[in-house]
Image 1 (cartoon, rainbow, N blue to C red):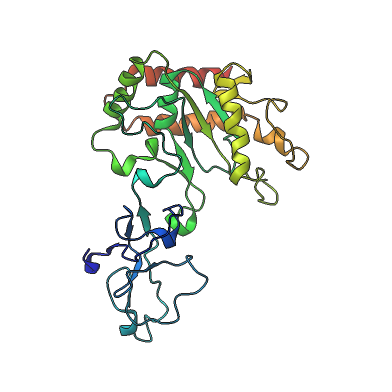
Image 2 (image 1 turned 90 degrees about the vertical axis):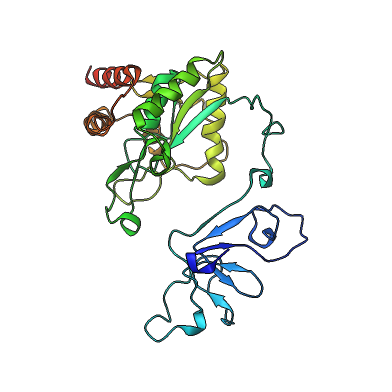
Length: 304
């Protein structure tokens, strides 16, 4: 690929058979494409800030994300990043070791759950299950996360991102939602929806209440248990939350009171959220009636 346009393909040859998602196993033919990263002209190796603690010490042959040779930098640009902050890579589904065996079957694969997630320091509990398909689509349309100051300059303000796909939608959100509803309406066994949030923080010291990473599986296992009738949960206006005794907490050391916060709905906080969502949804023409009905129902239940 032309380095002048800031898009580079990997070219480091390898015969390794390890997970292709690993950086050193992404060679020609692996199906991986890197964007906005630094690349070496001769070896095809790619690099970005964070891949290693420091940039390569031998800078000959390295070009930054814009295609400029690192050796051509002057005193003013010497310490500029090699990769763009929006650098990333994509790889073929066939490189994913957990890919379903029937992924390329014309009939598709069964989907048991559709899980949305967002980064919010309060309001959103650890996980809430949603059994009504229309409410699940509504949750996706009102998906939001707190923007970071470094990335957005908004310092914690909530940014709505329908289905986490807003920059990539090719037609209006209202019609997009109706497409979801139409597909789900034709299914004999529609999937359960859920919303997860691993990022609740203590309001006093700012620490995360949930450890995250592999412990996130605890919440997902509860979701499957609920879906198959092995867990009842606690019903709230915004979905079904686990009870403390339904979560597998074996070996998990949470501080006193943290679990209560993780599995709690603040009705006043959610009431304010519904006002913001009203403004958000008002942007979308042709919003399906089932979506509007869900919004009204949740708002009313929160006020009761």
